[in-house]
Image (cartoon, rainbow, N blue to C red; front, side, top):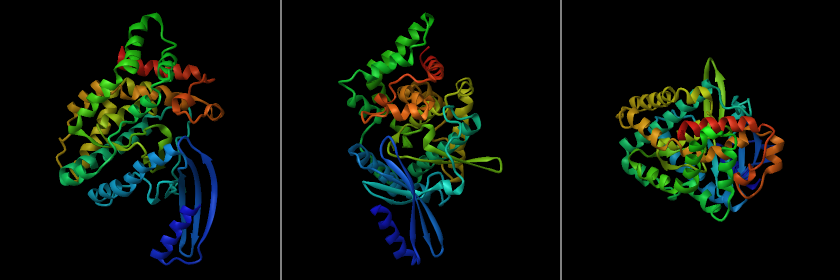
Length: 369
């Protein structure tokens, strides 16, 4: 763990700590890289660390975006907030091969406990408020320091296009549209055709149109599924920490909202009351802008609804695979994992397939019927 030792040397130099030792915890493999934990003991206390190791070429490429997020964007957003923004873990060190973060589990944060189930309404609300504040800080940065916002650079990429290019000589995406609609009846044939046409034929044009909506661009999280949030319940409130910013970029807020609500927030309560949940997000955005003495009407609710109606189907692409991962047993996921990407990794029949069918039915019919 050379990266951890480099971090400790840096801390020792800055803080003059004594009697330092490192206790390494468990490690495990992820879909992009390996993760592990460590505890640094020193004369004044302990530092709990979460370590992401990026060894594959894909992991190294994606880590550049995450490094940019932690080293460039987080300090700017935190400064705009008056050093009050706490929705991401502290980053101690970031390189092409490893990222060392604060291990927020030591502060009582945990992953969603009901694996296989979408977040409950209370937790969906907490995440939407978190995104409202996050996007609100982006809008504030655009208003207060427009040249700084413009200078924040990302590679001009869209992860969905990368996925489509990776599979351009493969039938896996088309195969997944068959899986996602396999339980549709004859009465839903037109809806099924519309969805498959969107994914197989129209999605590149759709993405170009979405990209052109740059007037309301913010810095987005980009990877909005359940395991990229941690929660802590305190005195009736739910604190949220967002994780994994490898897909962070400038885009419409709809990118985060659609991805989140079609995967982690995929429940009947949400899709029967979409406007109410969008309002929760928008109120948090407006409150953030008000608090920072910025124009609260920079992204009107009417514009949010317009973009949702036009671009909300963005998340249906990712939900085909992510929803399969969410409902599958751990053993099924581990057995199916392949280096060929998430779509090949989740191209299997789960023992919980009926739950997958129900979710995809609800999502696809909402957007395409």
